[in-house]
Structures are given as structure tokens and as C-alpha cells.
Amino acid sequence: MTNVPEVFWTKYDSYIFDADGVLWRGKNPIPGSSTLVNALIDAGKQVIILTNNSTKPLSSVLSKLKKLEYTSVSEKNVVTAGIVTADYLAKKKSNLPVYLVGSEGLKSTLEEYGVKSFGVGPDPITQYTDETILSNIDFKTPVSAVVTSFDSHVSYAKIMRAANYLNNPEVDFVVTNEDATFPGDVPGVVIPGSGVVAAAVKTASSRVPKVMGKPSEYMINYIIETYKINPAKTVMIGDRLDTDIQFGNSHGLDTILTLTGVHTQTEVDKAIADNRLDLVPKAVISSIFALMK
Amino acid sequence: MTNVPEVFWTKYDSYIFDADGVLWRGKNPIPGSSTLVNALIDAGKQVIILTNNSTKPLSSVLSKLKKLEYTSVSEKNVVTAGIVTADYLAKKKSNLPVYLVGSEGLKSTLEEYGVKSFGVGPDPITQYTDETILSNIDFKTPVSAVVTSFDSHVSYAKIMRAANYLNNPEVDFVVTNEDATFPGDVPGVVIPGSGVVAAAVKTASSRVPKVMGKPSEYMINYIIETYKINPAKTVMIGDRLDTDIQFGNSHGLDTILTLTGVHTQTEVDKAIADNRLDLVPKAVISSIFALMK
Image (tube, one colour):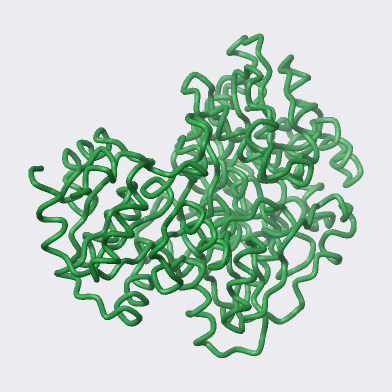
């Protein structure tokens, strides 16, 4: 891949960046990322920071961006799978709450869109006994949807509740994203992601969920509607083939893989060998630093 | 299907019964089941009660059988996925323990085969904070295998431990069975099974497990080796197409579906329509009572 920087600055109107593994890794910024993002915004380009991570409300994401010196970034530059989920649920205009297997942050995001939820926090099986579990776990409360996401308090009781709510085909099944793991601060340590909770509830319920995050069409539709992007003049920069790159490729965007996150050149070579062209990026860079002028 | 009882009594040497949904449903016996099983044993037939449920040690299963008046049944008539798992692990002759995401009962079964394990019981995330989770969740203890099964205490911490142990390709991944749900006492209530824990750990680890229970070959190999059955003179009676019937069909046994458990005639019709002949039983009966002389 030659002359990425030239092409990168002239070819596109809109720039979509994944966050974790691209702009930062856990708590550590990727060198050059804030300078690049600020420069694009200051040059009048449309910049969207697009993350499947929905554990934090928008205010927290913005605080982190400010702390990491993304000085030109504002609220309108950030889209999370949580926002797409909240927007989807708000448009259903149900008076019933959703049962949420997720984080406090996602609950806050839903609230900002007027969507009530319950279920956040510990619900350990230890408060039930063998004899009372069936009668004492509450799944009689009417709900409009079951929403699953990252939940560090996921438990048997929560999975059972979710499966029993979903036993009613009128209850919608929505998952923020199906990422199996998070890229973490500590190399070699596996951090289970939202996909783990989704897999558990899918198995228990035999239901197929609507996935809001990358690579699904819910997210691109939200972006096209909200930002009026022209896919032919848009580039997606990400660190995962199965979310970021597939998302870009399947919606007509250019795609760049940066090797500071989950996937490596080995996975790119494998995707080419397997003829999975939907997973093959247009370009591969070692780090976002390679995109600086 | 005509004359099942005639054929049933004369054609076979060996009779394999699934337990939950066939002989009983939760705590309630299926009428006629103990009389039938006792009569077969008393007539000199080989009878195997074969269950994927591995939450109870053999002694508990035998107590339940005695209580439900299976007077002719002894230890040699019962095989659980837990026993097949314990036998498999014991033959590896490792000095390292296994990390068990499962029940006290399975831990006891493993111990009877000389296999040490740890991990049973609550391991809630509430004892960790955001800051300490990576350093305080222990996955440095050397283990020979991760074993998953039914675990009412399944938690984020347990899934994370399992995924990190499995990050070492030399650590074996063994699951007792992948049944998504249990047939319960209360109609309409979904009770998540071992398959839910397996799905979560598979997703977090990206590893493919060895499945010990029905319909896998580990279970039939254990039975052929232990009981010297002749598949051509053996019948499998079960309530699930994807475990019992597939297990029987794929290993050359005759198969009978009884409609007192999970699957119904609708699922049989669907399997026929989908040309999934591996899931289609040779015969369908309303209840085990139909097999009485």
C-alpha cells in the first residue's frame, strides 16, 4: 500500500474511526491519534468515532476523549452501539420497560432516549434456593424487549430471566454487539465481551437477536440517516476484520486495518486464503501514526 | 408405527433410556416407567439409563431411582455425561487439576475417578473492582483442562478464568453436554442447561470443546467399551431429537421418541421436511407406557 497519507487526506469527506484498538488501547492512547483526529475535524472533514463498546454513556466517552487531548471532538463526533440501541428502542415507543443484561452506563444511555430499563447490577443465584428458583425469579413483569450487552454481573438468574421473557415471541431481542472479547491493557489476557452474554442468552432462548453494533445494518443506517454520509467518499479505520472491516466493506466504504488492536496480518492473509473478501481491508497500516501528513 | 410392544420386547438385547423427559419429568415419574425398566432387567435384558444430566453424582441418581421404585436397577445400569467426562479425564493421567465450571455433584463424580478440580460455587464479580479484576482473578494456577457443565453460579469471573486458561492451547476443553435447556416441572418455564455455559466459554475463548454427552462419539464409545452392546440389537428411547435420537441414529441403534419431554411431533415433521434424517426417530410413542406388554 503506497501513499496512504496522500489518498487519505484527499479522497474522503467522512472518516469513521473505531476507538478501542485504533485510537487507544485500554487506558493507553495510540501515538498520533488525537493529533490526526483534531486535524481532520479542523480541516472541515466529517469525523465519526464509532464504537461497539456501550458500557459508558456518551458523557464518559467525551471525558475520556478530552483527557486524551481530542480537543476538537464534540458530542456529534461519537456514536456507540449503545446510542444506536437506545435510538432503535425509543422509536418503538413502548410504555413497557426493557430487561437489560448490561452495564450502568448503557442504562444511562437508554434513559437519555427515554427508554426505561431494569436488571442492571448483581442478581446472584445465591439468593435463591433449589426449591424456590422457579417461583422466585421474576419473569412475570411485562417487558417490551430483552437487551444484552457487556455485563460483568452476568449470572444464571439473569440468563434464566432473559430466556423466559424471550419465551414470549412479542418480546424483542436486541443485542448491542457480538464482540467476543475486548482488547485489554494487559497483553495475553482475554477479556470476555458482549458476545459472551449474547451467546448465553441465544442458547438458552433459541431466539435470533437484532444486533445493533458493527457490522450490522442498524449501525450504518443510523449513520447514513444522522450524518448523511456518502459511502463512496467515506473510509472506515478499524482493528477487527469481523466488525470494523466487514462493516465498511459490506456498506461500500473504503477500509483500513490498523495493527494496534485485535487482528494481525496473519488474519488478513487467512481471510484472503479463505476467499472471505468481505473481511479483507483495502489497506493495512502498522498504526494510525502512518496516516499523518 | 404398529406393534411397537411386540417388536420392542423381541428385537433387542440392549435398551438405552434417556432419563429426564422419558422416565420422569423433574420430580414427577412418567407412569409405567419403573415397571417397564424393572421388567426388562428381570427378563435378562441389558438396560442402560443414559443421561446428559451430570449435576448429580451416581449415588444421588440411584437414590432417586430407588425412591421412584426402580427396584431392579443398580449402579451398572446408569451412565451420566459426568461419568463419561470423569473417565475421559482420568485416562489422561494428569497430575494437574481441572478448572470446573459446574456443580458440586460433578465435582464428586470427578473425585470418584481420581480427578481433582476447583472452581465450584459462587465466584461473583462483586469481590473484584474495575481496577483489580485483571490482576486479582486467578488464572495462573496450572490446569490440565477446563470442564464446563450446568452451573447455577456461572459468572463473568468464571467465564473469564475459563477463557484465560484456554488461551494456552495445551489446556484441554471438555464439556459434559451442550443441552440448551432442561425439561422442568413447570410447563412453559425455560431452565437454562449446560449448553448455555458451554456457549459462553466457547465464545470467550474461541476454542472448540470435546463434548462428552449425547450425541457425541465419546458417550457411545464409552458404552460400547463398557457394556459390549451390539448396536444392531440396541434401541435408544429418548425425548430430544438433537441429543437422544441423533445419538441413536448416528451410531446404528434403533430409535424411539417419546412425547413426554422436550420435543413434539411438530419437530419430527420439521426434521422430515428439512431432510434431517439423522434427527428422525424410527418410531414415535405418546409415552413410555405404550411400550408395556
